[in-house]
Structure formats: C-alpha cells, structure tokens
Length: 191
Image (tube, rainbow, N blue to C red; front, top):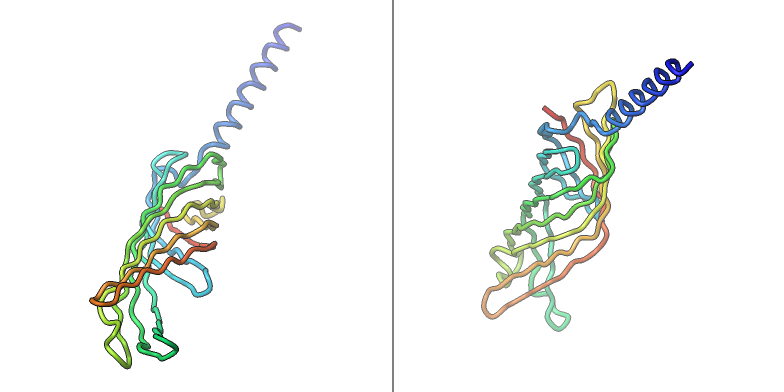
C-alpha cells in the first residue's frame, strides 16, 4: 500500500511538473519573426515589423512605418499653406511577458521612435522641408499562435502614444504634441 501511494504521488508530481513546464514553453521563443504591424488611430499607419523573443519573458521589435500626412496652416483665419508629405517612422519596442503559455503570451512594454515628414506646400512655400516626429508609448498586448501553425504569431496591443512633431525654418518654429490611445494589430512569421 505504501509503495502504491509513493508511485501515485511520484506520478502526480511528474505530471504536474511536466504540465507547468509545457505551459511555459512557447514555440516563438528564440525565433525571429518578420511581418506586419499596423497602428489604428483614426487613420491607419502600416509598417514592416521584425520581432524577436530572446527568452520566454523578454523580447524586442523593430518597426518601419510609412504613411501620407496632410497639413493646413492658417494665420489670422487666412490659409497660408496647404500641403502633404511622406511620413517615415522607425520605432523600437522592448517587451516583457509576465504570462507565457504554450500558444500565447501576455506582455507589457515601452516603444520609442523617430521619423520625419518631407513636407511640400501646394500653394505657398511657407512649410517646405523636413518635419521631425518623435514618439514614445507604454503599452500592453498579447500574442497568439495556432497549435497547427506554430510559426504564425498574431498580436494586438493597446497603449497611449505621446507624439511630438516639430518644424523649424526661420522665422517659423512649430511644436505640436499629439497624445492619445492607440490599438495596434500585427502578424509575424517566425523562422
């Protein structure tokens, strides 16, 4: 009877230990993922993304976003500039995942980035040249992969972005802060 209890107890310990080890092993750990990341904040900012989970809990992501920006400038109710430009923005994310399961993980992180808009006025050359964009944002998110297709990771993130847009061209000096909540969706294929 004592031997049976010992065997059952040892079996339960092995099963419980194996279950918790499997729950912490994620197939994306130690692999590089290449894919898409899109920020949905009014308009859509889409980008190419490279993601890497160095350990079960720590990862990083590099994004390159491209978009079109439009602007208008008025002085005393009179339009002085109406234009557009190409927005190019590079960001780096650092991520920490306190919850890792076999097919998913929950993570928190911080993202910072820098970019520019090459502005071209349609009417008057009051705003021509490069407009600098800085961004920083804390966020949380989750990534999921399918058991049948473990190489594909789908993720979403929610956070608060702080943007600073600045333009300097004598005598004009413009600083604009754009802050707000954002939602980001992505898909990465892990090699």
